[in-house]
Length: 69
Image 1 (cartoon, rainbow, N blue to C red):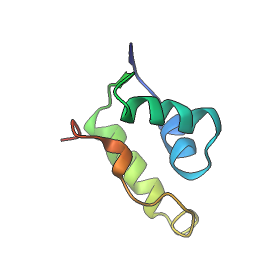
Image 2 (spheres, one colour):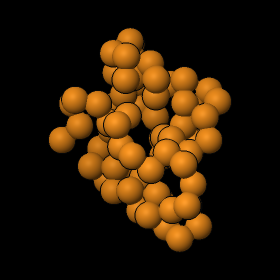
Image 3 (spheres, helix red, strand yellow):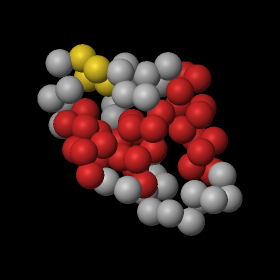
């Protein structure tokens, strides 16, 4: 299955869990393919580096997977 997650799903999955984290887990396992633009990745990186979120867990980017440019 191919999907496009918006920034909110990506950030929620990284930082908080729940259904968004399950979507990222499925992507990581290769069961779902998430298409993402460089601009979306920049937005996710910006949000993660923001002072209001930088202290939260999930700050590594292992969920990008092998296909991340």
